[in-house]
Amino acid sequence: MYAPVPPDPNAPEVRVNLYSDTQTRPTAAMREAMMAAEVGDEQLGLDPTINALCARVATLLGKEAAIFLPSGAMCNSVAILTHCRPGDEIVAHETAHIIEAEGGAPWALAGASVLGLPGPRGMFSAEALRGALRGRSRYSPPQTLLAVEQTSNLGGGAIWPLATLAELTGIAREAGMAAHMDGARLLNAAVASGVPARDFAAPFDTVWIDFTKGLGAPLGAVLAGSAETIGRAWRWKQRLGGSLRQAGICAAGCLHALDYHVERLAEDHANARRLADGLAEIAGIAVESPDTNLVYADVAATGRTPEDWASALRRQGIMVSVMGRTRLRLCTHLDVSAEDIETALAAFRAIN
Image 1 (cartoon, rainbow, N blue to C red):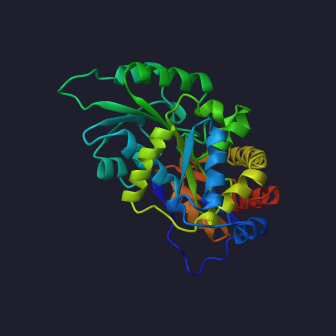
Image 2: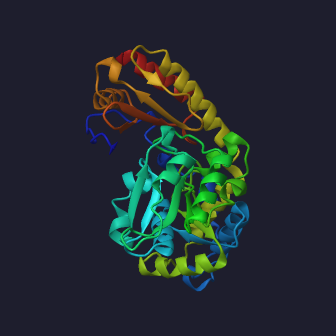
Image 3: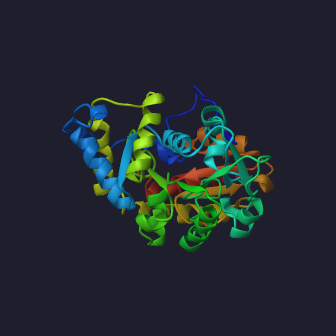
């Protein structure tokens, strides 16, 4: 599914990096903030910058407490370990990140399986969820967790509607399940939809935001929930070796991102729309209109494979992702300008 193009030592310098929003580099101002950070032992609660970040994210997401972790994938793992026991079952979309891109972590670490539900654009319906509920039986795995990814990566950066999330979490609660939101691009959803992040997060027991994608920080994600839940999450952070020391240096970059890089996500969304419109004009390329900053281009009708396209673009200094047998993913972010979008489109036209 995720298929990076092997490095080519003869390829030119990357001019436009549309591979992922994880490719952003910290800005000069962010680096200055990190250098000036007050630090202490995070594990003992003595790092003031970590404490400030966790308090701010908890407030942003409407939760009692939060915990700083090195990555979003670790947030998912810690949340799953906190909610689930070996033999439990998680219900998620069949293209969810926890299924497709985390090395089988739910199975390997928590001993929990994931039941993937179908549905367009990385989302499933209330009817699909009801149909997947097994009921309590000694013969079936206990279904203990509903997991939702906002935005849906493989769904093209699609935004789950607030009403749908409320309905799904209501069904889950009636079935005795907890609810977890993979909020890797939650702030993209909030900016694009105008719905506050805390409203999206409200019906979920745990939710996290990633600072290494559109927000442009080099490291870090924050998982939020009730004080009791985050207390249990801390034990899993410790077990997984994620307890940190003077991590305020990293947290300062995240705080800077919250101050300066949230509202500007709208620029990434505008660039993604322009990119999608331009690609749609090229013969054989099919593009869905993006909700946020992810553009998926199906190139099957061009007669070229996605790998062919990615390699040819890389020779022109353009980096993109290969996603499956027929699709490319192009991701706009802090380091991609409107001018870069036109450069990328020119490269596509030259190949076609």
